[in-house]
Length: 365
Ligand code: SF4
Ligand code: SF4
Image (tube, rainbow, N blue to C red; front, side, top):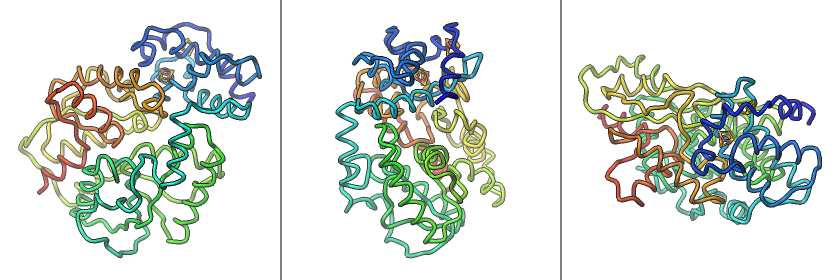
């Protein structure tokens, strides 16, 4: 707690982060600003009196880390916010109702998107392969149920490139929603369950389709379990070397896209070059958004905000969509794909949004 309070106390309210915070920019409301969140966190962590407005401030943070990039002291507000949510719950102030409902359905259904467990493998473009491997492709709830093209094209692309991997018939949720809803007790349970399952199967390496699962395995599991002993890679990190090893480089331009860096890959991991390189090797010209790489905009769905502040989330997504001049918008996150596709559909826009492995697979076919 002391370390967190030290970070809180570093803030001199210089206001630099206000320029980049998507929730503040969308609302111009101080309660939705990084400064308010830091002040509220200080109060929560020190046991001060809490108002509903303060709870809203903490639960409307996208945990996108744009503020940290801008802050002269690199204050990790997303981490402070997460610990404030945990502390609030310990003080008897639960997460907002939509989070509680999703926690309940995730426990009941084993996925975070209200999907029918019997249909978890509907995305699979062939019979379930009873193949064993020490490498696991973990597709995650969003791409298994919602943006199924992300799961299917990732699976087919890895097969096409001759990667030895397996998938799970009983893949469950990574538990990131429990983290968003401050249910670290449930997150710990599911983390133990998943880690034991991977151990029993002899999994040494996990390829992730979803940056939220990647973040959860990489950063949240070790906070709760101490460490995890398997290698984690997001699929975009693997693809450039795979293509190069197989001598694949399409010289002519076969298409063009706009690339969007998902928050969970951009910050703090800095995974920028790999997705651009794989598109380039596949003959796809990459156009950039006005802000990209470490400054890339958030899709508005991070940290469970889409459930508790729907209008705010849509406003944030809408602003990004407006900046896309070359369609399709390509992203390496199934949640971002859903978030941008939803707003495009809602606004009657003809801009398309696709998961990165989709155009790469097409180019290589
Ligand atoms: S940029 Fe950093 S120091 Fe300045 S107000 Fe924001 S959090 Fe505080
Ligand atoms: S993490 Fe994102 S939404 Fe939260 S305060 Fe920082 S910039 Fe704003």
